[in-house]
Length: 250
Image 1 (spheres, rainbow, N blue to C red):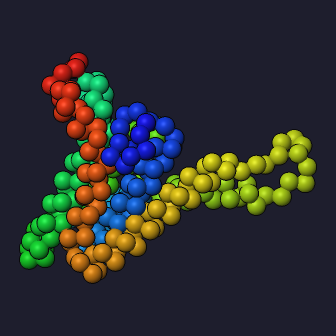
Image 2 (cartoon, rainbow, N blue to C red; image 1 turned 180 degrees about the vertical axis):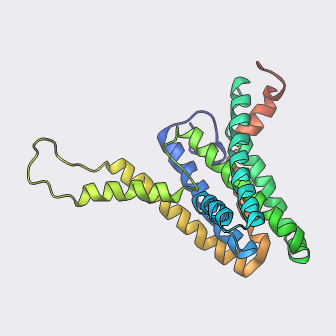
Image 3 (cartoon, rainbow, N blue to C red; image 1 turned 90 degrees about the vertical axis):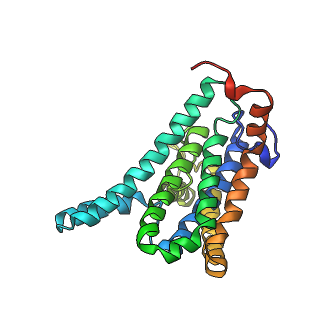
């Protein structure tokens, strides 16, 4: 497994590569989520809140708002489904770009978001709802990639879970063991490090995304797309060079 960034999305994995990719994607997710809020007034990775709003709006009789929120949940879900389909399809054909391909789709969608930001401003009634759906799809797409890569050890958009796991390990660190009987409470230092890095990466990305959108507008998403393209470059080019896109089992 290469340490070079353009091979971080290769199918040949190790824990270090998973963490490097996870932190990078956490940063991109944070930037997209925070910048997206400034763009369209909606956080797009917070499915717990969005699904709760479906229930609230149904009880309040606001059917249209409930349907809009449900569309966002389904978009996130469809993003995860798309990643699962693409990864399994590619792995059956022994492609090194199995994990890279969904990230390449994400890069393309972020480019669309950045390049056509002016149209969103001019036709907000049409494009803002579509943009929110698009961003939810991106969040689901990306979260499913790192979940499959790390066998569900790492998530990039589910900060609630990351903070929960971080709190559990911090609780162990702060626990005072009066004796080692029957079993000493010991923190998993590896998990503590991983979750600290992931949460920090998401927050750092959110700061950069909010600042970038505030200062540059929609074009701030273009650097995020370029980073994703760099992450996927090695495996995608290797598959093209060896003709794997046209070979392999179904």
